[in-house]
Image (cartoon, rainbow, N blue to C red):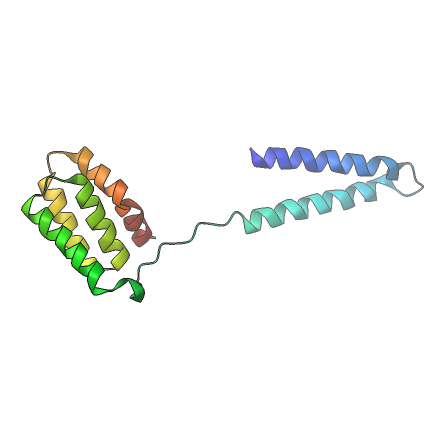
Length: 143
């Protein structure tokens, strides 16, 4: 759709600029070819550059986040979920924390535990994956 709008605007601009120039003694075919070249080169440059893509999520942990207090809170949440696993919001927080901390081994283990607990409820698994950012994280790993 954007291409159609760009083409209409470009042709309208070209016609508005060519009108006064065609009344001169110069050959209007050359002027039309020049304007067409400008339009085509502009559209070609836009097609070549395209639109920017969003930045990829960082997969490495940030050293400032590796404080003992944060790790203790995440480990405490993991222990509470082992004792009482029926807490989708807790699982989403735990998985999101593991992604942010970059603890891939614990992330995989805890995601498997959550998936096993909710094996008969795929809608809850999908909700936890969406809320925790696990879907985006897994998609960034596949790229």
